[in-house]
Amino acid sequence: MPVTQNATTRYLKEEKLLRLLQRLFPGRTDFNIRMRDDQWCFTVPSPVSECFVDRVTAPIQLIDVLPGNQCDAVQLSTAHEIEAHVSSTKPHEFSHRHLSICQRTSWSPLQVTRGLLELLVSKHDLSDSFWDLPSCFYHRNDDVEVNFCLPVTINRVGSSVEVSYTFRYPELKASDGQWAIRQTGLYYRFDTATSQTLSVLFSPTPSSAAHRKVEEMFLGIGHDPDALHNPLRIHDLLFATYFPLWRQYVAFMESKLRPVTGTTFATFIEEPLRVGYDSLSTLVSLENQFLQAKTLISHGEDVLRELISIFGQEALETQSPQAMLPLDNHRHRAESYRRTATTLQRRSQTTAQLLADTLSFRDQVLAKQQNGSMLQLNKSAVFLTTLTLLYLPASFVATFFGMNFFDLDQETQRIVSTPTIWIYAVSSIILTVVTFSVYYWVLHCDGTVVSKMQPKIYVGDWKGLTRRALTMRGETAKKVEGALV
Image 1 (cartoon, rainbow, N blue to C red):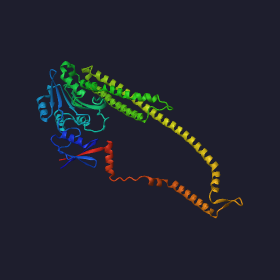
Image 2 (image 1 turned 30 degrees about the vertical axis):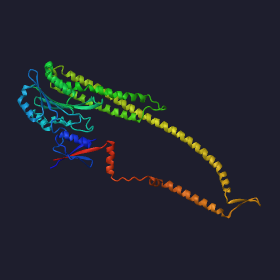
Image 3 (image 1 turned 90 degrees about the vertical axis):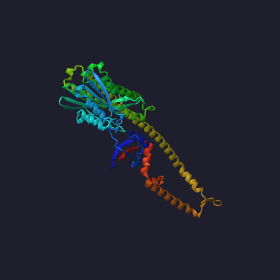
Image 4 (image 1 turned 180 degrees about the horizontal axis):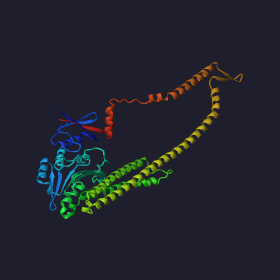
């Protein structure tokens, strides 16, 4: 029985869809791709998941810290490999186990199947709250939930405490030099009785900075034995890797704000403006970006505060007195980044308001100048009307007596008129009545006249025309519908 699946998609062309399906289902070429009611329809062997892939494309990285500070690193791609490794390693044989799962890109699903992740969850007895983490890493094609971060979730099961959270950070893309907002997540479980810990790191790319540094930390644990006894080390490493980037991101946005701000404050209404409505759009965009940065930094600050509180309640700071200091320092830096973003957001908001007022006052000045010009034109019209009234009677008299209806009698030296002069009087009266009638009709029926004068455009298939117009503008919003066999 075929199953229908819908997925929101933008800017999707048939060629790109075909290449995507060929990567997801190697060996198949006929997907019966067609367009129906602004939806791409195709036939695939199995459903396309939003959070997971159907075939593992990037193996799960697993690192066990064994007694004697020895590390065992493996890559797991199948259920058989997971079963074999978990069964060969007893729980008491490792002090820490680290799992790393990644996306291919920030807008791609996790590069692991749901079955493998369910197997890992069951083998390690993870609680149901763990599934909140992978639900944040799914396939997307626009900025949906770009400001959402999973808050700190705490579960206590016996002597074990589970902590999970996500946070977002900026990253400079080397390809085009633009900043992008990424997301990372961490699940951490520690047993206060046995000091055994388990961590699962979700990364936006296979080569993310935190993924590399965590591996370096565990694989080089022999050079830093204190890391084994510090339960906050992985949290410190995660924030130390990503959170300083907020300072660079805010500084980059400030460098775009300063020229517009300086030009706006140095603008005089009476002089030609060096800024316009395009600068107002730039200011509003920067204001939204500063607001987003402030929101995401505030979430990171809340995560750090919760971590300090959790580990403080578990009396871990007595076991490792210096463990809290790095997280506390990160929290202070987060406060500084947040205050900076808040200040710049208010500055951009103030500048946008000033620029809007300046443009409004400038429009008023131009309107005043135009009103002055219109007054001058009115004065000229009054002068011309006065001249017309002055010369019109004389012109009418000269024209009237210059007609052939009148003649000068040479004998009597008198002006005589023809008996047909009534034709002039009747024609003048009729023409005057017709003129005023037409004027009155046009004055009261101008809408009908204008509408009849407009050109008529025939639109046949208006739905098809709309679809083609939106496609040409690159603003189509299509939905992908797959029929499964």
